[in-house]
Length: 192
Image 1 (cartoon, one colour):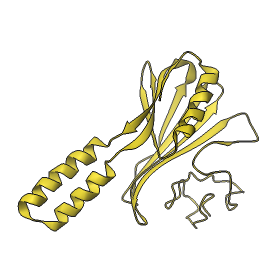
Image 2 (cartoon, helix red, strand yellow; image 1 turned 90 degrees about the horizontal axis):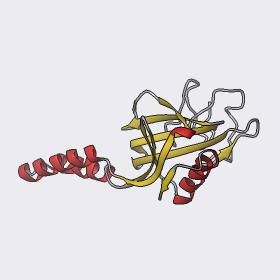
Image 3 (cartoon, one colour; image 1 turned 90 degrees about the vertical axis):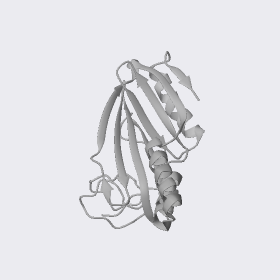
Image 4 (cartoon, one colour; image 1 turned 180 degrees about the vertical axis):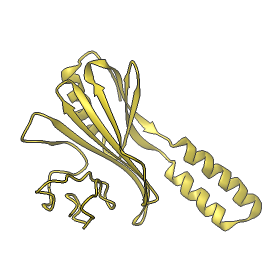
């Protein structure tokens, strides 16, 4: 099987590309390179569903430190979101599937994102590295502090839940996502 975004050869049972994080579809056309998937906003021609692919990653060369791939599909009055997280290239968390009813959305925000756990652990390693003059601890602290630095996320709040979608795209990408929510639920509050 080939990745539809970057063309990397992958095992046939792969769900996400290990190089670029693109969600893979297991169908007869999987070997074709699709040109319409960049970061966001591809629309399926077979149905009225609107599909977004958000990707947020931190990498050191070809080594993926942390990556989150989020696929959001608008179906009638709901958004189906599937998130896959990868740590240190090999460790994958089980995909998280969320269904959000658009009429239940109260607030959608575009926020800057800090990974507090990485910043805390990075600071601890930095302190111990400085106290013990241990170069490996200083290197680990730098990696953690760097991976916990700012990014962006879309935050969707309903009366029951808060869904966070980290991504590396532009504000324009988020605005398009917001417009699709607004076309179904014009009463939600949006914050950029």
